[in-house]
Image (cartoon, rainbow, N blue to C red):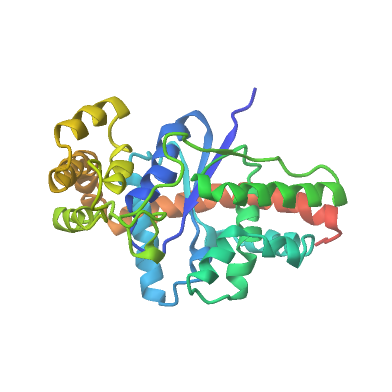
Length: 313
């Protein structure tokens, strides 16, 4: 039996946080060696919010360093930029011609971001179809995502179904892979951790930056257990360990935050050191190699798609 395909990606839209790590990075690191794995920097997706070209370029380099520091071996994964494979945007347009506006209007992520004050640009609205193209272009079997991104995979399956029903069996139906213990990672204010909400704990920030974020976690003035602290802490320790720890420090919110900080540092400090050893040239070389591999796979798929829809050279 041929090896199944796994794909994931993160926007180069700013500093990563522990929600990104547990929601996408760690699941990928835990899974990728068992699959033919594609790790994509979705720089075109980032254009919905990032308008500074120098920031986008540096963020693209940085996010690859983040993946490598988190444990990804570039010899065992194809790491590439979305913008290096033009078939992504081509396929997205084809899908946009198959789905309806009311269908796209149902997207939770779009409605949530607009409600939070982000500009309702067309790119943000059409985002799910570019993501569908990202996934389906490689006949992806498995996509590790956070629980809040489950709908994106449903949209990819709908796009595949629309195409397959119209033009014949072409695309593999992807399945999401969600870590039950993680789901939605909460931020320092108790909402979903997100750069947009400014409630994150930086993954590769300095010790002082991580400490500042942890000590700023909103706590309830009533009760013995600070729930927001606990919800983040359970990402780093088992429920049984936390039960003993929180009982011993009942009502001591500052002490519990310091214990959380120590556990976070135990995980991210080695990654922080590894990241510092990776140069920009190292990243460029990896992306160039990944571009060749991804382009070959995507081009072959698009030849099949073009023939089926009636486009010929």
